Image 1 (cartoon, one colour):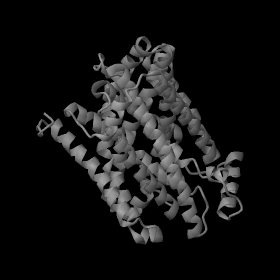
Image 2 (tube, one colour):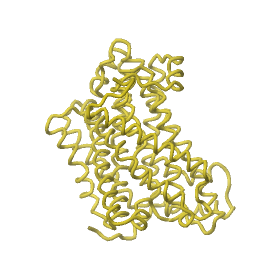
Image 3 (cartoon, helix red, strand yellow):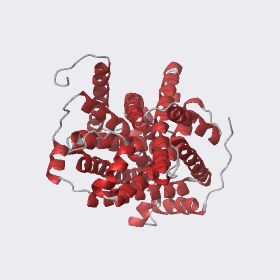
Image 4 (cartoon, helix red, strand yellow):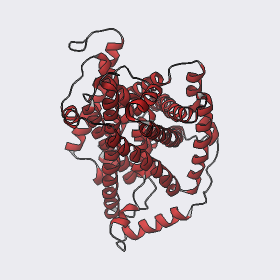
Length: 436
């Protein structure tokens, strides 16, 4: 356990803080002024483009073509809502979701929430770590364990920039997000997409069988991430120094715009993943379910450029999401338990399950999909807590959410809970009508 030291802030962080103060005082306006407030949602959006998404999206596109695109759309809309609420909580209260849970819930509830969050953190790191390692192993023809070691060193090095204030990390993660997005713009131009079928899949809900349900729950688990809901409130809680409700409303306005833009971009990347897999594999290769197999088959089907771009995006996804996952893990533990572990120790704890999975020879992609299902089952915990807090006037004051937003949030949480319940029932062998 370590004590916090005053960090030496980078020039970019100091400049951003001064710029935000000028905007809030009315001395600075325009698009460039708004960009000063961008960053938290970009960091959170990495959780929606992590390697777990690659695994579930490849299985969705290869096995069911464009039929599960609607699941990606619904998951992304739920993600926008809850990330916006999380950011709102941090901006208005100056505390993050874990801290407020510690302050307002009974101690047994706090311990349960923390335990569930730690399991989710390990599942998250399993997906992120394996994804980066798989990409490096395939690109440089190295053993998977060696790829994991390289991923560990790189992510630890990047995490050290967090000590320089928020801006350097936002710029680094933003560069990774840009790389992933650009890669999938390229993939869409390479792959022959059936746009009519894609459009139909986007607006027509369909779950053909139980395997599709499992993938759908995995997509939601990979898209609406527990640690991202916790983290977003922490990224916004002290970022802009607001003096009154007028300034608070302005920061909220910028935050909401950023959430919509960043999460819309993440949603489009996920849809592009499904569409690429549907285009390349569904007709004749629907059995493709592994990242490694997808990479090896992309070269003969779409060419070497498509395969190389796929790996670059996967490596960027694995490294950046692993960094963000560790940041979230620190915030969760510090918020619930008031404990801040040394960075290297926190990184080692969440890496252990990934190394165990590889060491015992488990199927890496299958482990990725299972990790996303675990995340989906853990997801209702922060979702319900967040709804409770943003609905309480004694906590949010004038910024308490209105009834329509509250209803939308409850519906989103209920949808996740319902899908999870159906999956658990099916897992224990009870057949449900229409999904046999």
